[in-house]
Structures are given as C-alpha cells and as structure tokens.
Image 1 (tube, one colour):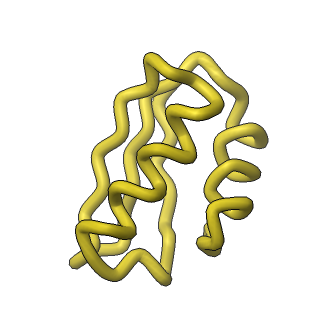
Image 2 (cartoon, helix red, strand yellow):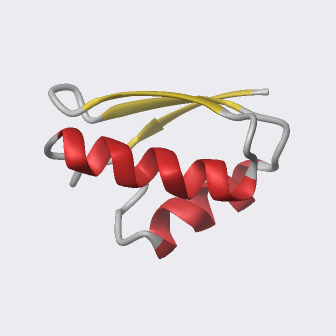
Image 3 (spheres, helix red, strand yellow):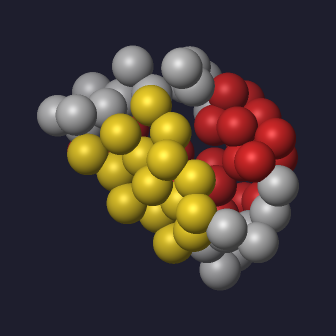
Length: 64
C-alpha cells in the first residue's frame, strides 16, 4: 500500500534518514521517499498505516 504523509517537523536530510529508519524498522522492505522542503513523505509498505505512523511518532516526529 502507498501512504502519503505530511510531517511538519521534517527539516533536513538527517530527519529524512531518521524517518526512513523508523519506517524500515516496522517493514524492512518499505520504500520511503521524503522531501524536507515540502514536508511530504511517501511510503510504499506492507505494514499498516497505524504501524507506520506510530513508528514515525516514536522517532520523535509529528504526523499531520
């Protein structure tokens, strides 16, 4: 499934890496594309939307 998420506090490439690692901690095969300029994250995953959002929140980011 493909998720389009808005993460207002996604500020830099280190943030992108942290979010990517958080998502891949839930689904190691997930494909994550993030743009700190637009604050948008696209995730292709087999995990539930709730699990992905929880992982991002646990990593310290807000999912809008």
